[in-house]
Image 1: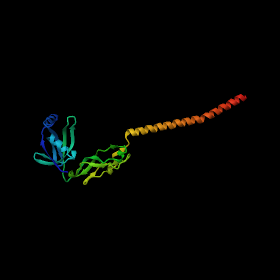
Image 2: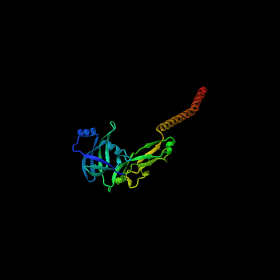
Image 3: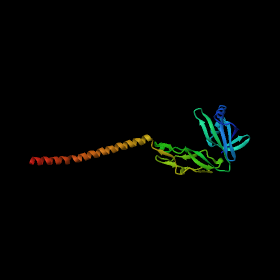
Image 4: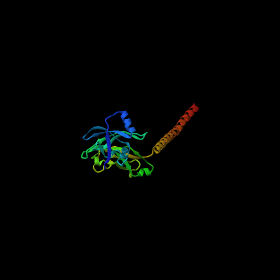
Length: 231
């Protein structure tokens, strides 16, 4: 993963009022912390940050963050956005070392067209991220989940995912990632049909039982009538 360069300015003041002024000026408040760095409040240009986080790596992009002329290798964390006004509110930069592995969340990307979907099934995406351990430069953009061979009723677990070179998946291998299922309407229709069939069988059994009891009762009545006439 190639590093992206971003210049940050130190900030001495903090608080909501200062943060609002920074955002009004087109900057985003942030904090740099991590390996070999004291927690340092900074701010970055909002437009430059937007371009930085819209690379293929998303928020896992590796950044050369320059503060007062000093370069820090860092990864953006806890990015807070105001989706209504389409702006960044705050974020952290985690300083890392090239020779030390880190734990990081990586998105799961579904690829392929499922056999089951072609047959009318639907894809249920259960797990959107997995935890990965790797060196900063080996952080993958995403972990791919290939659903091509999945038929209706089949799925993928974490154990079915392939970790990229240099990365180890830490998430439990038994967790469900994705499944291909019958559409809910089809399932409900099958349940209704099964319930109606069961009701029909019960009604038929009731009618058979009633027919079986009829002659016996009639016989008893006939016998009683004969006996009374004899008397």
